[in-house]
Length: 356
Image (cartoon, rainbow, N blue to C red):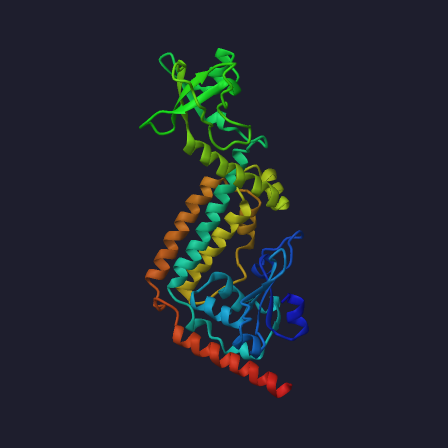
């Protein structure tokens, strides 16, 4: 099922502009994101074809089935609470039945965790991007040989340096296991013995063993830093997947402001922590942000990363205090949400039957 199918079948009961335009943080280059709620036809809901979410390819249009929407509300999910409390000027369509949902019966102290964890996931994303920008990885992938070391004189040196000193080719070397010594191998060399080499090819992910005649003299011990190579491969894969999928506009913005972190992620850290403070103090969700100028200054890269972290830590303490002093329930009223989910679905289906 596609979003177009939802529209054509009249299944959408809530459609809102979301993201920066709902927050009041849009700029001339901002996209229009859409979120909403739909109700599956009765035969699909009660049958085997339950669909909990429908989105487009870019995920900037996402619609949740009523059951999934209510379930996420019961977890105090930030995205869903924002959707429920979308400012009127960003609501495209809202079925009158949805006015029965009372946010104050859904909010709880659980919001401290959901909004707080969501906020700090953004810190992690911003920090991860900082690491990728500051430490770019060469497209040419390192081989296993770069993670091998050989004992030499009074210490150890990289294998590649050792081979250079000896003027040996890795193809003319052979390795054997050393009992009781993990990832340490006996290293042999012979230009005519047809050893298998230290690796079979540049794409190899492990060293290669050879059959070595007993009378052959061992030249050195070789250590393969297997864990280091494994970590490198993981970071290499993640880095180039990020390059392939990164949002070029956001990346260029990061490059332009020169602070080497994703400023948009950091802006959302403050938006989420501020919203959490307001929930604790005021028991309501304020989607449209009153401090647009400050949040856009963060997005533009005006502040240093460490400065923002200190400010966020202070805001987190304020959030902790707000919830400590709040008389919100510890958890959402699941009985109310469960009963409401049933009543709303029943009303929608009865309306469909009545209207044909």
